[in-house]
Length: 386
Image (cartoon, rainbow, N blue to C red; front, side):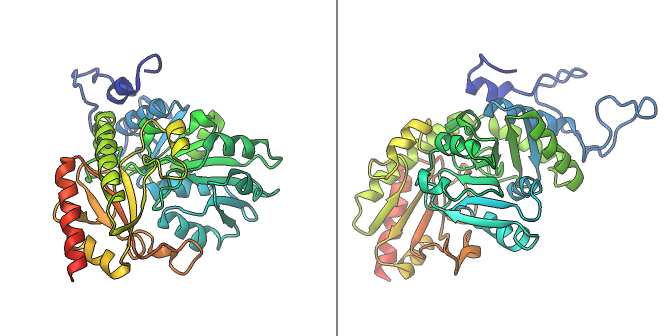
């Protein structure tokens, strides 16, 4: 199922059809490791579930349709998906990456692949011209997040993709689209080669599954990554795929509500003297607000802000909420709060990517916005009384 169907329709139907043997509306969960062959080498499309599973293929086809890509690939986690992309590289290759990104991504760059002879440069991707100047003759990959984790900076995907592809080294452009989801942003349509997701987050949407995905716009590239997926074997189980597929069906309406709630909270926090700075692409005060309006359908459900009184007060704040749960991860129906510096981004401590310890990150859920505002107000009050 492809165009002319709208995104909301594709989210429910793409890659899925009623089971031909039973008429089941939802794709069955194929809990099998192997498949009967009709003769030696003559299969019915599947031979071994590391290589392919019908439930996983339903998810992969759905993801490809949502990103308007040629092929989707599902993985056991977002980091497994990132690892597959990095396996395209060889010793001596160079990666240009945004200077604000997920701590786990930085960790695999510096502690795993740098040790294997791949070099990395981290630069401010919001300054397109200066960022592109960092591409060298051995640059094989440009790695982007937009909005970034945790600072919620943006970069101009179309301009960077065009600049990267016009460079003589012609590096691939991979965009971690986890914060935005395919509903809010379409990296492949803007020129990226790979769109990456932690399906654990908004795509799953219910904090009950761990997974990752890649979607490619080029069939040859997709086949190279499919080879890595099979050879390395970091694939999700069929039940995990089923849960992500289930979550995707409500993705559009959930993202609408996540964005609406986050907009309310960001405006409220921006007016609070106890908060030094609110980072949210939907606020006119965001330095890239215009780009967000042009590049994204909505500004999303993630907010970061700095507590004016500093680290100790920020720590008390995140430990004082009642509706916001103090936890890592994001993108579920419930609201989460965390301190990135000692939690999700501990791996960048002591590096140029180190995070301000007073920075608080919110994953705004689907609760009533007024209740969430009240919870933050009481937590801010309690944090400043201690």
